[in-house]
Every structure is written in structure tokens, then in C-alpha cells.
Length: 438
Image (cartoon, rainbow, N blue to C red; front, side, top):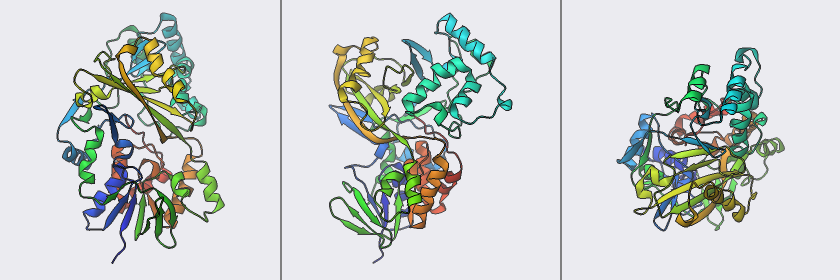
């Protein structure tokens, strides 16, 4: 009997690989450490409230992805993006750089003055993200908006990041756009996607239903040891598997911890791969009286969440009748905050700003994710190439956001799995990846 192909992880990339290979009549086993599929595209429920694991929408233009998503969820809500920013108690339309209207007159003047006096981009060598921001937006705006946000989202200073990941994520307005947005709130939407799609029922995970259907997914199977020479692996509960081929969507540092006799230079490279951890702070509300924005960014550093969004606005089926919900993303280094501090500097701050009322809160819930955002520092491209090349040399193929150690949108992560036979993920080793969407 031929040994099966084993896929590690039942997130969107792992399911994509299993889906593709099963269509070729391959014997596939998916091992998943959790008790359900979905990974960071999954969700959980509390007293009739459904929360995704971090915010997700679909705006993919890929026909294969959209066909799969439509099979999982034929009914979707079509949202026009309406993101906002919270800054010093002010609501500012997103992106802030060309929507300065709510700011005080002197602050707008300072931003515009710095914007006018930026150096010519073609005359300056850009060596890091901070330099890029100052050239694009001027010093004042760069320091008070994206540089402050970088410390919250990436847990590092902007100068520590390179710029290949930026892509179209940060809008670069003209001076005319900045002036218009400072004089009026009537500005066009300049967000990079014009439509966001979300399942009517089942949360974002519902998009993945057709991928998981009929697959041999074995849950609560935490892999702890891989022996590439013998083509075997062992789980925490003592089960041993022999494989003909091993495909992993797990984070690269996690895979490295399962191996022995790894060369020192590879271990050194793996230790250079950096990421943030993350908390999901979920709030159930007994009222519909919440901000009307699908999601919003928070620039103030005394407020811990980098981003807040509403599952109930994504789909009213995510909450009981008459209720609403919010979920906040707090990024951190491992074990950085106590639960009391997290709640005080997130939910407590929203209450003190009168954004929500304490008496309307039905419950709060805090959950920790050990892998949230890959940090694009100056070592990432060389370090991840060394690690992925080594894993490939011992027969471990890596896919997905954390297997490629990239910053992939969910549709890119799915395509990373679907394209496993073409090994298209190897393209990302030497080229900067595009950012993941929300």
C-alpha cells in the first residue's frame, strides 16, 4: 500500500493543497492541531455571537478562488468599504493622508507644509520604511500616523522594516488631493478595493466548506517530531505516520522545532525570522448602537488595539437579534500583557471615549494567537530563503502565509496550496510578497 501524502495544517492553504491533490486521486491525510478546520480563517461562537479569528473579507479577482468561495457560500453580503481612523478622539476617513478635514487647523497646516517640502523621491535613496514614509507624506504626518501605527501593528520601529511589502497598501495622494481632503469631507473613496464580500451565514470560514468536504482531516493531532530520513512524523498523543510526501502550512519556526540535526547556519537563519503575536478581544453588545464602520484603525498608542471591526456589520447573522459585536486586534510580543491590562486599555478606553457604553456590554473574551504578522525586517528575504531551501532539500514543501513566511492575502494563501504541483510558492522566496488584506 502506498503511503499517503500528509498535509500539516487545515487552514486555507493546507485545505487548498488537499483539495487540489485529492482531485488527482491522491491519498491525502490532513493533520490539524485544533478540533476544527480553518486556522486563522476559522471562527468561534459565544452565546450566539460568532467571531472570526482576526478580520476577514474577500475581494479576490481570481476566478478559481471565487468559484471555490461561491461553492462554500452562495449567499454573500457585498460591502462598500467604509474604513475610518480614530486619532485623538477624532473620526477621520481612511486613508487619513487625504482626509485631514476633521483635524485642528494648525495640525492640518503643519501636515500640508511638510507635505509640500518633501524631498523629490527620485533624488533620495530609500533604505528603510521610515525613510519611505517621510518622503511620501512629510515628517509630521509620518511621525504621528504611520510610524505610530507601525509600533502597534509590527511591534517595531519603521526604520527596522524594509519596503518591499508595501505595494498598494498605503495610498500615495497628490498635493491636490491632500488640500482637497483638508478643506472638505466630501472626498472620493481611495481604498484599494471597491467591494468586500462576506458570507451571509457561517462566518468567513464558510468559504472553506467545499475545500474540507470529504477530506480525511484528523483533528487534535499536534505534530511534535519529523524524521525526514525515515519519512515519518509523530504527534503529541503518540501516533506515528509514514508519508510519501510532506506538505506543511505551519509557521517555519514551528517546523524547525520538530527537526533534529539541523545545520547551525539554518538554525541561525530561523532565529532571524520575526513575527508578532496577537490577541483577539471580542465584545458582545446588547445594543446596535456601535460605530457604523466595518473596521477602523487606531493611531493613539495609549489605546492597545491597532484595529477594531464589527462582526455584526459584516453579517447580522453573526449576532442574536437586536445585538451587535466588536472585535479588537492587539499585537504584541509573547506574554506582554495581562488580561486585566488588555481589557483596560482596549474595551475600557472605548468606554472612556464614549464610543460604547459599559452597561451595553454583555461579555468580553480574550484569545491569544502565537503567530499574527510576519515582520518584514531587513533580514527576512535571506533568512527565509535559507530555511525554505533547507526544508525543501529534506523533502518538506512549505505553503501558505506562514509556510512561505510572507504577507499574503487569504486568496494568495489558498492559491499557494492549489498551486502545490507547480511549486509557484517558490516565486515568493526571492521576491517581496504583497500584503494580506483585511
